[in-house]
Length: 75
Image (tube, rainbow, N blue to C red; front, side):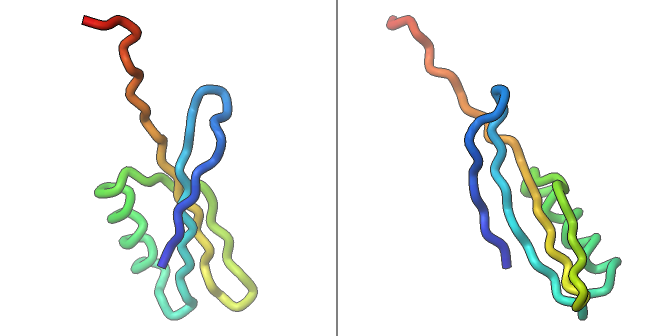
């Protein structure tokens, strides 16, 4: 249903993107509930929505990639 990609860091923040497409048969309320579910449980936020001439919704979701820094000291 979706595919994830990663973009190079820009100004210290790295984002992971996921592209999801919903057909025109899905009502707006259903799409909203599906996106809210992804946001609450997957940490995704809405980046872009495009509605095509045929009624399909192409949604781009994003979430931050949090990297843990390694300590520079050795114990």
